[in-house]
Image (cartoon, rainbow, N blue to C red; front, side, top):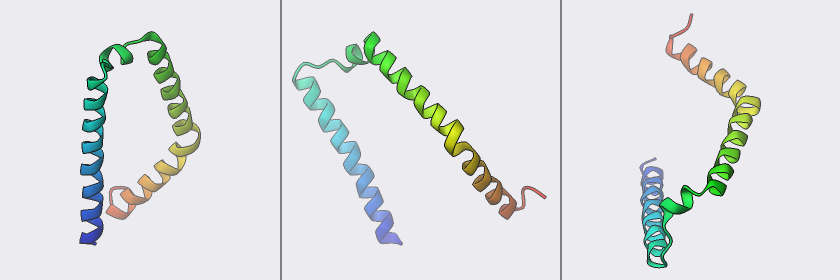
Length: 80
């Protein structure tokens, strides 16, 4: 189990390092993330994707997640 934990920790650290490197490269080539993110087109696209995620959660994942959460609570003795 400790081997799995070490692997997942390395994965997280690797992801953080890759994100930092990508940000440095974007900055080197003159891309300003603040101006890109604040662009109305990007803002509309992100809002659209967020709405899709919320709909997917409400229509597909919310019921099973609540069921599993209720089982966990019942197992812990929180519900009677």
